[in-house]
Amino acid sequence: MSIDTARDGIGTQLAHLGRPAQAGARTVVNPPVMRASTVLFPSVADMEADAATPYDGLHYGRQGTQTTFALEEAAAALDGAYRAIALPSGLAAISVAVLGYLAAGDHMLVVDSAYGPTRRLADLFLKRFGVETTYYAPGVGAGIAELFRPNTKVIYTESPGSLTFELSDIAAITAVAKARGIATVMDNTWATPLFFKPLDHGVDIAIQAATKYVVGHSDAMMGLVSCTRAAWPKAREAAGLLGYHAGPDECALALRGLRTMEIRLRRHQDSALIVADWLAARPEVRRVLHPARPDHPDHALFTRDFLGSSGLFGVVIDPVTKPQLAAMLDGLRLFGMGYSWGGFESLIIAPNPHKLRTASPWTEPGQLLRLHIGLEDPADLIADLDAGFARLHAAA
Ligand SMILES: *Cc1c(COP(=O)(O)O)cnc(C)c1O
Image (cartoon, rainbow, N blue to C red; front, top):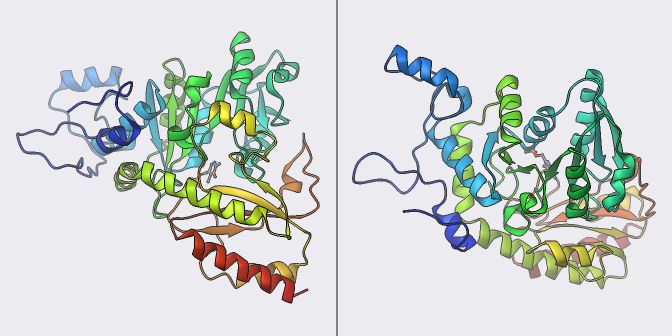
Protein backbone atom coordinates (compact mmCIF):
# COMPACT_ATOMS: atom_id res chain seq x y z
CA MET A 1 0.00 0.00 0.00
CA SER A 2 1.37 3.38 -0.87
CA ILE A 3 -0.04 6.86 -1.02
CA ASP A 4 0.66 9.44 -3.68
CA THR A 5 -0.05 12.86 -2.18
CA ALA A 6 0.07 14.43 -5.65
CA ARG A 7 -2.71 12.20 -6.94
CA ASP A 8 -4.75 10.79 -4.06
CA GLY A 9 -7.58 12.87 -2.60
CA ILE A 10 -7.37 14.16 0.95
CA GLY A 11 -9.80 11.55 2.31
CA THR A 12 -7.67 8.79 0.81
CA GLN A 13 -4.50 10.32 2.22
CA LEU A 14 -6.00 10.61 5.70
CA ALA A 15 -7.14 6.98 5.62
CA HIS A 16 -3.76 5.58 4.58
CA LEU A 17 -0.92 7.87 5.69
CA GLY A 18 0.98 6.92 8.83
CA ARG A 19 0.43 3.18 8.51
CA PRO A 20 3.90 1.75 8.15
CA ALA A 21 4.42 -1.83 7.04
CA GLN A 22 4.57 -4.29 9.93
CA ALA A 23 6.60 -7.45 10.03
CA GLY A 24 4.77 -10.61 8.96
CA ALA A 25 2.21 -11.42 6.33
CA ARG A 26 -0.79 -10.48 8.49
CA THR A 27 -0.95 -6.97 9.93
CA VAL A 28 -3.32 -4.90 12.02
CA VAL A 29 -4.81 -1.77 10.49
CA ASN A 30 -3.32 0.62 13.05
CA PRO A 31 0.36 0.88 14.00
CA PRO A 32 0.73 -0.58 17.51
CA VAL A 33 1.29 1.80 20.40
CA MET A 34 4.95 1.32 21.18
CA ARG A 35 5.92 2.61 24.62
CA ALA A 36 9.62 2.88 25.34
CA SER A 37 12.43 4.52 27.17
CA THR A 38 15.35 2.16 26.52
CA VAL A 39 16.01 0.90 23.02
CA LEU A 40 18.43 -2.03 22.85
CA PHE A 41 21.09 -2.06 20.13
CA PRO A 42 22.31 -5.41 18.79
CA SER A 43 25.99 -4.48 18.57
CA VAL A 44 28.67 -1.90 19.24
CA ALA A 45 28.84 -1.22 15.51
CA ASP A 46 25.11 -0.51 15.34
CA MET A 47 25.28 1.76 18.37
CA GLU A 48 28.12 3.71 16.77
CA ALA A 49 26.26 3.97 13.47
CA ASP A 50 23.16 5.25 15.28
CA ALA A 51 25.10 8.07 16.96
CA ALA A 52 25.53 9.72 13.56
CA THR A 53 21.77 9.72 12.85
CA PRO A 54 19.99 9.89 16.22
CA TYR A 55 16.77 11.13 14.60
CA ASP A 56 16.40 8.30 12.09
CA GLY A 57 14.59 5.32 13.57
CA LEU A 58 14.64 4.01 17.11
CA HIS A 59 17.32 5.60 19.28
CA TYR A 60 15.91 6.36 22.76
CA GLY A 61 12.32 6.79 23.92
CA ARG A 62 12.58 10.55 24.12
CA GLN A 63 13.02 10.80 20.34
CA GLY A 64 9.96 8.63 19.78
CA THR A 65 9.03 5.15 18.67
CA GLN A 66 7.33 3.66 15.61
CA THR A 67 4.03 5.21 16.77
CA THR A 68 5.59 8.68 16.82
CA PHE A 69 7.31 8.13 13.47
CA ALA A 70 4.03 7.06 11.85
CA LEU A 71 2.34 10.28 12.97
CA GLU A 72 5.33 12.40 11.93
CA GLU A 73 5.37 10.78 8.50
CA ALA A 74 1.66 11.43 8.00
CA ALA A 75 1.95 15.05 9.19
CA ALA A 76 4.87 15.73 6.85
CA ALA A 77 3.02 14.25 3.88
CA LEU A 78 -0.10 16.31 4.57
CA ASP A 79 1.93 19.52 4.73
CA GLY A 80 4.16 18.68 1.77
CA ALA A 81 7.05 18.95 4.24
CA TYR A 82 10.46 17.27 4.28
CA ARG A 83 9.88 15.97 7.81
CA ALA A 84 7.65 16.70 10.78
CA ILE A 85 8.16 16.50 14.53
CA ALA A 86 5.53 15.47 17.07
CA LEU A 87 5.66 17.50 20.28
CA PRO A 88 3.79 17.41 23.59
CA SER A 89 1.61 20.46 22.87
CA GLY A 90 0.92 23.17 20.32
CA LEU A 91 2.81 25.66 22.46
CA ALA A 92 5.82 23.32 22.56
CA ALA A 93 5.66 23.24 18.74
CA ILE A 94 5.70 27.05 18.63
CA SER A 95 8.70 27.28 20.97
CA VAL A 96 10.67 24.63 19.05
CA ALA A 97 9.99 26.32 15.71
CA VAL A 98 11.29 29.72 16.78
CA LEU A 99 14.05 28.55 19.16
CA GLY A 100 15.70 26.63 16.33
CA TYR A 101 16.42 29.94 14.63
CA LEU A 102 17.00 32.41 17.47
CA ALA A 103 20.04 33.41 19.54
CA ALA A 104 20.88 36.28 21.87
CA GLY A 105 20.88 39.58 19.99
CA ASP A 106 18.37 38.44 17.38
CA HIS A 107 15.12 40.12 16.43
CA MET A 108 11.76 38.47 15.68
CA LEU A 109 8.63 39.88 14.04
CA VAL A 110 5.34 38.50 15.37
CA VAL A 111 1.83 39.16 14.08
CA ASP A 112 -0.17 41.29 16.52
CA SER A 113 -3.09 38.85 16.47
CA ALA A 114 -0.94 35.88 17.53
CA TYR A 115 -2.20 33.31 20.03
CA GLY A 116 -1.76 34.88 23.51
CA PRO A 117 0.75 32.34 24.89
CA THR A 118 2.93 32.92 21.79
CA ARG A 119 3.19 36.55 22.83
CA ARG A 120 4.04 35.52 26.38
CA LEU A 121 6.80 33.23 25.07
CA ALA A 122 8.30 36.22 23.25
CA ASP A 123 7.71 38.88 25.92
CA LEU A 124 8.40 36.93 29.12
CA PHE A 125 10.84 34.23 28.07
CA LEU A 126 12.76 34.94 24.85
CA LYS A 127 13.33 38.50 26.04
CA ARG A 128 15.29 37.12 29.01
CA PHE A 129 17.69 35.51 26.56
CA GLY A 130 18.24 38.71 24.59
CA VAL A 131 15.74 38.15 21.76
CA GLU A 132 13.78 41.25 20.87
CA THR A 133 10.27 41.05 19.40
CA THR A 134 8.37 43.59 17.33
CA TYR A 135 4.67 43.08 16.64
CA TYR A 136 3.20 43.88 13.24
CA ALA A 137 -0.34 44.50 12.02
CA PRO A 138 -1.90 41.41 10.37
CA GLY A 139 -2.57 43.38 7.16
CA VAL A 140 1.07 44.43 6.74
CA GLY A 141 1.73 42.39 3.56
CA ALA A 142 4.99 43.13 1.75
CA GLY A 143 5.25 46.27 3.92
CA ILE A 144 6.73 44.01 6.58
CA ALA A 145 10.10 44.66 4.87
CA GLU A 146 10.06 48.13 6.45
CA LEU A 147 10.24 46.45 9.87
CA PHE A 148 13.29 44.36 9.00
CA ARG A 149 16.45 45.01 10.98
CA PRO A 150 19.92 43.65 10.23
CA ASN A 151 19.36 41.11 13.05
CA THR A 152 15.82 40.00 12.11
CA LYS A 153 15.87 36.19 11.99
CA VAL A 154 12.24 35.06 12.21
CA ILE A 155 8.83 36.23 11.05
CA TYR A 156 6.06 34.52 12.98
CA THR A 157 2.60 34.51 11.43
CA GLU A 158 -0.83 33.15 12.21
CA SER A 159 -3.71 33.52 9.76
CA PRO A 160 -6.47 33.99 10.65
CA GLY A 161 -5.25 35.51 13.91
CA SER A 162 -6.41 34.15 17.25
CA LEU A 163 -9.55 35.84 18.66
CA THR A 164 -9.89 38.52 15.95
CA PHE A 165 -9.61 36.47 12.73
CA GLU A 166 -7.74 38.89 10.47
CA LEU A 167 -5.91 37.23 7.57
CA SER A 168 -2.35 37.94 6.48
CA ASP A 169 -1.00 37.80 2.94
CA ILE A 170 1.38 34.91 3.62
CA ALA A 171 2.86 34.76 0.09
CA ALA A 172 3.66 38.50 0.16
CA ILE A 173 5.36 38.16 3.55
CA THR A 174 7.39 35.06 2.68
CA ALA A 175 8.53 36.60 -0.63
CA VAL A 176 10.20 39.58 1.06
CA ALA A 177 11.47 37.36 3.88
CA LYS A 178 13.16 34.97 1.44
CA ALA A 179 14.83 37.89 -0.36
CA ARG A 180 16.46 38.78 2.97
CA GLY A 181 17.14 35.26 4.22
CA ILE A 182 14.66 35.58 7.10
CA ALA A 183 12.85 32.41 8.20
CA THR A 184 9.05 32.31 8.39
CA VAL A 185 7.04 30.26 10.86
CA MET A 186 3.26 29.95 10.63
CA ASP A 187 0.68 28.75 13.15
CA ASN A 188 -1.80 26.91 10.90
CA THR A 189 -4.03 25.48 13.62
CA TRP A 190 -7.23 27.12 12.34
CA ALA A 191 -7.14 25.94 8.71
CA THR A 192 -5.10 22.75 9.21
CA PRO A 193 -3.18 21.39 6.17
CA LEU A 194 -6.55 20.36 4.73
CA PHE A 195 -7.57 23.96 4.03
CA PHE A 196 -4.24 25.83 3.83
CA LYS A 197 -0.76 24.55 3.06
CA PRO A 198 1.78 27.02 4.48
CA LEU A 199 4.83 25.48 2.79
CA ASP A 200 3.20 25.98 -0.63
CA HIS A 201 3.04 29.70 0.24
CA GLY A 202 6.76 29.91 1.04
CA VAL A 203 6.65 29.26 4.79
CA ASP A 204 9.66 27.40 6.26
CA ILE A 205 7.96 25.85 9.29
CA ALA A 206 4.23 25.21 9.74
CA ILE A 207 3.06 24.40 13.24
CA GLN A 208 -0.27 23.02 14.37
CA ALA A 209 -1.79 22.65 17.76
CA ALA A 210 -2.85 19.10 16.88
CA THR A 211 -4.65 19.22 20.24
CA LYS A 212 -7.41 20.90 18.22
CA TYR A 213 -8.59 19.35 14.95
CA VAL A 214 -6.08 16.52 14.49
CA VAL A 215 -6.89 14.89 17.83
CA GLY A 216 -10.41 16.26 17.46
CA HIS A 217 -11.89 14.67 20.58
CA SER A 218 -10.64 16.94 23.40
CA ASP A 219 -8.75 14.11 25.04
CA ALA A 220 -5.07 14.66 24.20
CA MET A 221 -2.45 17.38 23.81
CA MET A 222 -0.22 17.34 20.74
CA GLY A 223 1.86 19.70 18.65
CA LEU A 224 3.15 19.16 15.12
CA VAL A 225 6.00 20.99 13.41
CA SER A 226 6.29 20.52 9.62
CA CYS A 227 9.58 21.64 8.11
CA THR A 228 11.27 22.29 4.81
CA ARG A 229 14.51 20.38 4.28
CA ALA A 230 16.53 23.43 5.32
CA ALA A 231 14.45 24.11 8.45
CA TRP A 232 14.28 20.53 9.76
CA PRO A 233 17.76 20.21 11.34
CA LYS A 234 17.25 23.43 13.31
CA ALA A 235 13.83 22.50 14.67
CA ARG A 236 14.83 18.89 15.30
CA GLU A 237 17.90 20.00 17.24
CA ALA A 238 15.85 22.47 19.33
CA ALA A 239 13.28 19.76 20.17
CA GLY A 240 16.07 17.33 21.06
CA LEU A 241 18.02 19.78 23.21
CA LEU A 242 14.90 20.84 25.11
CA GLY A 243 13.98 17.21 25.77
CA TYR A 244 10.47 17.46 24.40
CA HIS A 245 8.68 14.15 23.98
CA ALA A 246 5.24 13.40 22.57
CA GLY A 247 3.80 10.34 24.29
CA PRO A 248 3.04 7.29 22.12
CA ASP A 249 -0.54 7.06 23.40
CA GLU A 250 -1.12 10.67 22.37
CA CYS A 251 0.47 9.98 18.99
CA ALA A 252 -1.92 7.06 18.51
CA LEU A 253 -4.87 9.31 19.39
CA ALA A 254 -3.63 11.89 16.88
CA LEU A 255 -3.32 9.19 14.20
CA ARG A 256 -6.86 8.04 14.99
CA GLY A 257 -8.04 11.64 14.70
CA LEU A 258 -6.50 11.98 11.25
CA ARG A 259 -8.68 9.18 9.88
CA THR A 260 -11.88 11.19 10.31
CA MET A 261 -10.44 14.66 10.05
CA GLU A 262 -11.86 15.52 6.65
CA ILE A 263 -15.46 14.62 7.44
CA ARG A 264 -15.24 16.29 10.84
CA LEU A 265 -13.77 19.48 9.41
CA ARG A 266 -16.40 19.68 6.68
CA ARG A 267 -19.15 19.35 9.29
CA HIS A 268 -17.45 21.97 11.52
CA GLN A 269 -17.18 24.25 8.48
CA ASP A 270 -20.79 23.87 7.33
CA SER A 271 -22.31 24.18 10.80
CA ALA A 272 -20.14 27.18 11.70
CA LEU A 273 -21.32 29.00 8.58
CA ILE A 274 -24.96 28.21 9.41
CA VAL A 275 -24.57 29.55 12.95
CA ALA A 276 -22.55 32.55 11.73
CA ASP A 277 -25.29 33.45 9.21
CA TRP A 278 -27.91 33.25 11.94
CA LEU A 279 -25.80 35.41 14.25
CA ALA A 280 -25.20 37.99 11.50
CA ALA A 281 -28.97 38.59 11.32
CA ARG A 282 -29.33 39.09 15.09
CA PRO A 283 -29.98 42.66 16.30
CA GLU A 284 -27.40 42.24 19.12
CA VAL A 285 -24.59 41.36 16.68
CA ARG A 286 -22.44 44.18 15.31
CA ARG A 287 -19.89 42.15 13.36
CA VAL A 288 -19.25 38.53 12.55
CA LEU A 289 -15.53 37.74 12.38
CA HIS A 290 -15.45 34.83 9.95
CA PRO A 291 -13.13 35.06 6.92
CA ALA A 292 -15.26 32.71 4.79
CA ARG A 293 -18.14 35.20 4.91
CA PRO A 294 -18.25 37.83 2.13
CA ASP A 295 -18.65 40.62 4.74
CA HIS A 296 -15.21 39.88 6.22
CA PRO A 297 -12.63 42.58 5.32
CA ASP A 298 -10.11 39.93 4.20
CA HIS A 299 -12.57 37.73 2.31
CA ALA A 300 -10.75 38.22 -1.03
CA LEU A 301 -7.57 36.86 0.53
CA PHE A 302 -9.56 33.97 1.97
CA THR A 303 -10.94 32.94 -1.43
CA ARG A 304 -7.48 33.33 -3.00
CA ASP A 305 -5.63 31.20 -0.45
CA PHE A 306 -7.91 28.85 1.49
CA LEU A 307 -9.62 25.63 0.46
CA GLY A 308 -12.14 25.80 3.28
CA SER A 309 -12.89 27.12 6.74
CA SER A 310 -13.15 25.49 10.13
CA GLY A 311 -15.47 25.76 13.11
CA LEU A 312 -13.93 28.69 14.99
CA PHE A 313 -15.04 32.29 14.55
CA GLY A 314 -15.95 35.40 16.50
CA VAL A 315 -18.83 37.80 16.84
CA VAL A 316 -18.89 41.28 18.32
CA ILE A 317 -22.14 41.98 20.12
CA ASP A 318 -23.34 45.28 21.58
CA PRO A 319 -21.64 46.25 24.84
CA VAL A 320 -23.10 44.31 27.75
CA THR A 321 -22.78 44.38 31.53
CA LYS A 322 -21.01 41.55 33.36
CA PRO A 323 -24.32 40.23 34.77
CA GLN A 324 -25.82 40.22 31.25
CA LEU A 325 -22.85 38.33 29.85
CA ALA A 326 -22.99 35.85 32.73
CA ALA A 327 -26.75 35.39 32.27
CA MET A 328 -26.20 34.51 28.62
CA LEU A 329 -23.16 32.25 28.95
CA ASP A 330 -23.74 30.56 32.32
CA GLY A 331 -27.11 29.23 31.20
CA LEU A 332 -26.07 27.72 27.88
CA ARG A 333 -27.16 24.12 27.59
CA LEU A 334 -24.85 22.89 24.81
CA PHE A 335 -21.99 25.42 24.51
CA GLY A 336 -19.32 24.82 27.14
CA MET A 337 -16.96 27.50 28.44
CA GLY A 338 -13.34 26.45 28.38
CA TYR A 339 -10.01 26.77 26.64
CA SER A 340 -8.94 24.90 23.60
CA TRP A 341 -11.26 24.04 20.69
CA GLY A 342 -11.34 21.71 17.69
CA GLY A 343 -13.16 18.90 19.46
CA PHE A 344 -16.60 17.48 18.73
CA GLU A 345 -18.26 19.77 21.27
CA SER A 346 -19.24 23.41 20.92
CA LEU A 347 -17.49 26.01 23.04
CA ILE A 348 -17.84 29.71 23.74
CA ILE A 349 -15.62 32.23 25.52
CA ALA A 350 -15.80 36.02 25.96
CA PRO A 351 -12.17 37.12 25.46
CA ASN A 352 -10.82 40.64 25.61
CA PRO A 353 -8.31 41.20 22.80
CA HIS A 354 -7.76 44.90 23.68
CA LYS A 355 -5.02 44.17 26.18
CA LEU A 356 -3.19 41.72 23.90
CA ARG A 357 -2.60 44.11 20.99
CA THR A 358 0.26 46.56 20.69
CA ALA A 359 0.85 47.27 16.96
CA SER A 360 -2.74 47.47 15.71
CA PRO A 361 -5.10 48.31 18.59
CA TRP A 362 -8.42 46.49 18.80
CA THR A 363 -10.82 49.41 19.16
CA GLU A 364 -14.13 47.56 18.88
CA PRO A 365 -16.22 48.76 21.84
CA GLY A 366 -18.62 45.79 21.78
CA GLN A 367 -18.22 42.44 23.53
CA LEU A 368 -16.29 39.80 21.61
CA LEU A 369 -17.52 36.22 21.76
CA ARG A 370 -15.45 33.38 20.30
CA LEU A 371 -17.40 30.33 19.28
CA HIS A 372 -16.24 26.89 18.33
CA ILE A 373 -19.00 25.07 16.50
CA GLY A 374 -18.85 21.36 17.26
CA LEU A 375 -20.51 18.40 15.63
CA GLU A 376 -23.94 18.90 17.22
CA ASP A 377 -26.97 19.73 15.06
CA PRO A 378 -26.71 23.42 14.17
CA ALA A 379 -30.43 23.99 14.84
CA ASP A 380 -29.90 22.93 18.47
CA LEU A 381 -26.90 25.24 18.79
CA ILE A 382 -28.90 28.14 17.37
CA ALA A 383 -31.74 27.47 19.82
CA ASP A 384 -29.19 27.46 22.66
CA LEU A 385 -27.79 30.84 21.57
CA ASP A 386 -31.29 32.22 21.01
CA ALA A 387 -32.25 31.39 24.59
CA GLY A 388 -28.93 32.93 25.68
CA PHE A 389 -29.78 36.24 24.03
CA ALA A 390 -33.21 36.18 25.74
CA ARG A 391 -31.49 35.75 29.13
CA LEU A 392 -29.07 38.55 28.24
CA HIS A 393 -31.97 40.94 27.63
CA ALA A 394 -33.83 39.80 30.72
CA ALA A 395 -30.75 40.64 32.82
CA ALA A 396 -30.60 44.22 31.50
C1 LIG B 1 -4.54 26.14 21.29
C2 LIG B 1 -3.65 26.85 20.35
C3 LIG B 1 -2.27 26.69 20.43
C4 LIG B 1 -1.60 25.90 21.52
O1 LIG B 1 -1.90 24.56 21.50
P1 LIG B 1 -1.79 23.66 22.82
O2 LIG B 1 -1.82 22.29 22.32
O3 LIG B 1 -2.98 24.04 23.66
O4 LIG B 1 -0.50 24.02 23.50
C5 LIG B 1 -1.50 27.32 19.48
N1 LIG B 1 -2.04 28.08 18.51
C6 LIG B 1 -3.37 28.28 18.43
C7 LIG B 1 -3.91 29.13 17.35
C8 LIG B 1 -4.22 27.67 19.35
O5 LIG B 1 -5.53 27.90 19.28
